[in-house]
Length: 317
Image (cartoon, rainbow, N blue to C red):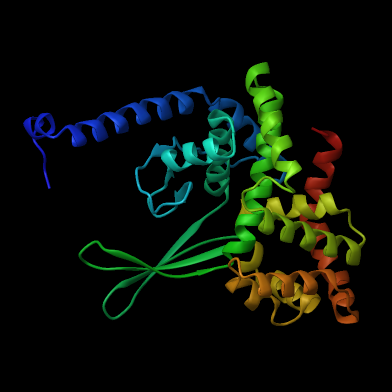
């Protein structure tokens, strides 16, 4: 329904709502403008460099505010190539947990930018009554139905739990590096924010997913003899390059290491505590077959990580 200027004057509630949105948007844009995108770009570029992707151009997005009570705190939409922030929800979280809103904004924006800088590919095929759009990156796959009237329906999502774990762990590293060069005021607020999260056993966002990725890296490190940090750097490389679970050889080796149903179960995992516990047990429990597959896995991983390892020695930062 369209409203004229007169209708707002006649309806104080609507006028108040519009004024609230305007003031909230101005505050949001002020914080967005304070984010040093050049420094963020430099940090991401360093990850590209260490992953052997130094020719890749860093492309970040300016976050946009959205007023939608049903939307998540932040969202990167690859089909639109946009980042949306539910700033009202962010303010609610900041108030409820006594977080600094500027620090929280940096964390959420960097998480969504992490999704953006990971390589994403789109494929399409024509079905009987719609076009099927597949959007995938290294550790996630989404299928959409696109209709002639412009309507798009989300059909299926796979591996989101693991993908969010990798991306959040990556985002936390980026925030840490970014804050090292921040001003004393913002840096101090960040240390308070970080200490609060650690006191409650995590960072409060995607903690289960990050814990699972940590367990995954630890299991591979134990079975292969490769350092856990190198395993993690290899996962970052997979995410940035867009390979990961979509690589046939890697899928085979992971299945042999963790069991033939592991990837199938992982693809459906979505905050289900029983299934989460089952998969953690699978990741943390060793087996003869897993060890044998692990030895083959490490050869593949070492080949992919050779450049990363060398660059980490040359540039410890």
